[in-house]
Length: 294
Image (cartoon, one colour):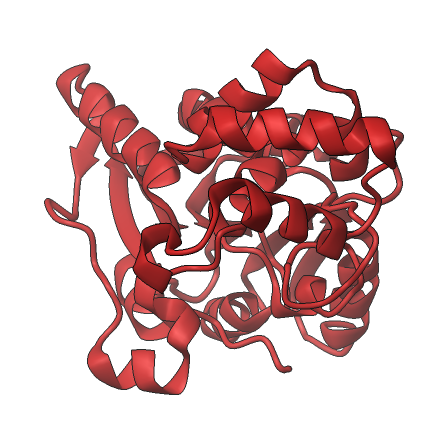
């Protein structure tokens, strides 16, 4: 399944990259947004792309190796952009892009991101570290913490019942695959869950992915660091895919505007057109917000 960049035209319009400028893509992923930005900044421009997935970084380096101009691709968490700039002795950027959705490639990479296939329950974006997997979490967290995590990050109202069932089942047999977990969740919530609108495991899988990868903490960190990353007049463009992320972006942008650090460009989030949703159903939940540094 090829990765299709979400809201590409809107990103380009709002970032407005020009020849000779410096842009950062903190979630370079398949490189769709990046390629379009690199084309516009030209041979005199400078581009820094980060991705947490080492395999993705190798593919990106290969993709951009013939590009004329300064294109740097690094295996790093976007939360560490400030440190990367300091280490590479790079200036503040004209713009920063974050697409917070996970990649189609990661869905196909047997990481256990989806309950649609039976795979090892991993869910880490970065497979090079020794951070706990989703299996470690569901087999190791105490019941109360498990329930809190599912409620907080999955906004799942049946979190207590689900956590209780997980703990009961893991005493019998270790939970190691996506099917193991999906079946346990489905059994816990029973028939008629959300009147069949979503799979019973949807919110639990979201919660685990966010927890395992520290997604909300990473977002908070880069928003706190943005004055050290983007120059005055430069823009921060963030695409989020669920309400927890969007709420953080919206709240922090408002706080920064009150502190006169800059201004909100998008009073309401930009969403995909019906045409884009038809071509790429994943874009349906995307919300794009923009902040311009003062």
